[in-house]
Length: 623
Image (cartoon, rainbow, N blue to C red; front, side):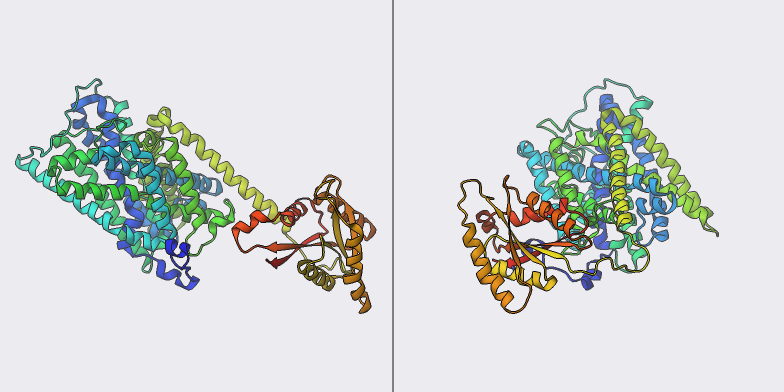
């Protein structure tokens, strides 16, 4: 077993693709970690905005969370319909492309890419924030821990969606059970009047600002980060096994129901136990859920189990993006808006180019913002709500185009479009000056890049397109030039092959490539060629190859060869010229340090500068 087999697993055959599909039990951790994990940083982001109100902020958190939960319910109903309408893939890109046109689909693709990248950065930074809440001594290691978790999630997904989902199932369900149980216990205590905290949260300071419409709008915009990830199921429908729609619906139901209960419960318990947001940059930082768990259960075993599950879910919430990002990139690449490598499955039937690209970009983002969640939050949610809006608008057009009793379905998606547009406007207005302008610039830039890639493929297709029957334009064999340094088994093999292509074979030797002081016995070189190669071939009655010595006064390889090609081209119009390059194939990486790269450089230069009638052939020799 090779090291790569040990890390990534054995190579899978195409026929094993069906075995890598997932059911709803694995689907929840594979696609729901983003949504479930956002229950931690969504309410905390809202409480952070309300912090200037001091203790009065707790009276308003419910009014901020309520419309978010209502919006979640609308999106749940909408995406259930989207999954039915597009059971192969119902993501915003597909829906927009089919119903709103190419420009809208590019907007959806750019927004999804931004959302997925930010989800990775925010999820991991929030998870590490939960860790340093429990172990403050690790605060100085925030960024290295973020990058380590990023690498772990990337490797897990390079092994395959199914393995990642099963691997992350235990912490996911443990998190949901732990915090729903803690919230239920707290609500019972609050109801019965026995709500004294086991560990009192830090006392909220006096307010410096009163409630205002603008402050509440900003808090709503920050809290909407809890909505990200809801679209992941519709984007990843192709990952489910049969029955696809039922597994997708069950996954979506579990995610949305759990998220809704967590959001409502956190808001109620935070109000009851007077828990507010703290500054994450300070050494004594405690996340909202850390304060809640300590207030309800103390800092014993239950607290550490719950916080460990929270840490795992937040850190692993990036898995949602690692499932969705490569799939959306594959769809975009199939439409020629991304390099085609994004559409190729690797050894584990994973679209690994997308996984690696996401890892690199998210890593750069974490480094740029120091792994601090609060610095990343202002960039978040815009991409998600833009995709929500495009998906809902696309579904409205979808139902309008189909006759029948679709009025109710159309009404649901129209309502979803209306509320997501309103939410998007609020988020843009509230977060623009806080950093959201970066996303507003990034999305059009990505769209221009995608359009540029598509333009390249379209122009290439036009140049390669042919019409009519196959035409025979040349009937004479080409002149074949063989790159020749000195006689060896490698050059003998190349010359033998060249003679099967054409009777006109020229061995080309460039003089003084090593410099003016290089000793070179030209006469011996010529005599050996005539005596050992040309003579025996002619004796058999075959056209003998010729040796041509070409000066290389500036020690370059391609220039003299191309000049020779031009002369031959002019002397033999209507005949192609083929250049055959013997190339030593080295078995070990370290051997490359012992040999030059003349053959590779010559091939690269010829491919870049050669005319339409020049063929370049490599004759490999195993070293």
